[in-house]
Image (tube, helix red, strand yellow):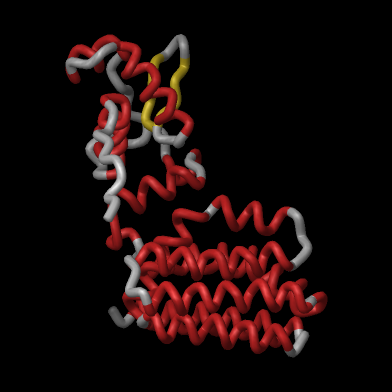
Length: 237
């Protein structure tokens, strides 16, 4: 057994989480002006350089905006954030972030990306693509039989759907899908808890069966129906 290396978070990371947590909780609101980096360093009793790099990361995540002349202000992260911001939101809120409205937003994003991939793949499906997707399903079954941790199984589902994007032949779609990697894996963890691993694996098989019929519209409709089913089940829990 190898549990791996346990690493403590850095002072910079702890500071980022502290400020982000205050923003997410509403303690700090959009438009609020933050103290100077020197003042923040004194309050937190950490180095000014740690605060400086932390603030740069918070700005990259869309939580704050620094103006050299006017100081640093809290931003509306929903407007200025990015995919890394979404990952941090899920990290902070755990499963409570995956409420019905957020789940609906996420499924709409997935159908926009994966729906186009499924549409293209259904028209151009090759034996190699089928073999790749079948291998993904076998890996999911093997992982489930080994009773691996939930994240390992969720990763199998991510790989299957990412390979659909890759096999579609569109260069951009798999890159877009992969940018939502951590968020999508969290979604699959939630789906496995809700539906059970056997049902999730069967959905993979059913989607591949529909793709094999090479009917683009039917394939997209089937994918959308899967999402609607999951969203309905989410509303009941």
